[in-house]
Amino acid sequence: MGAATIYRTLRLLEESRLAIVHHFPGKGALYEVAFDRDHHDHLICELCGRIIEFTDDEIEQIQLDVARQHGFVLHTHRHELLGRCPECRAVDGIPSARNGSG
Image (cartoon, rainbow, N blue to C red; front, side, top):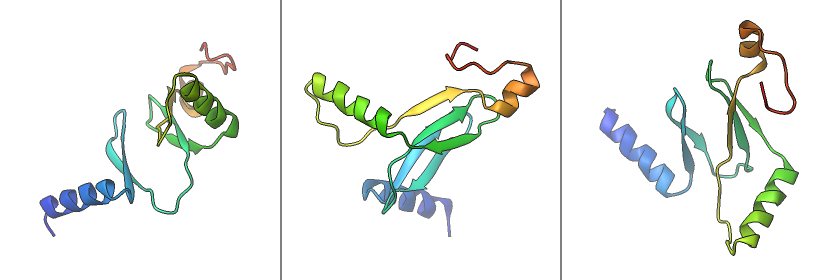
């Protein structure tokens, strides 16, 4: 099978909402199965590229509230948080910080 066929198929899966494409820093395009899968968001390490999937009902509700305050009806969203994972922080000697400042 040729590369053109693969890319064409991936594009069709995305258009059919059976796959979701993500463009994470340093990773190029990554595809996730979208069909019959619960929504989730991503934590992305800027150094090693580690991606952690997470869900948080409070964040989801806040996003809906903000959209509603601005007259939006959300159809979908992508939430990506960029930072450094614990392993990369340990290598760099960066202490853990709950307030996001380091």
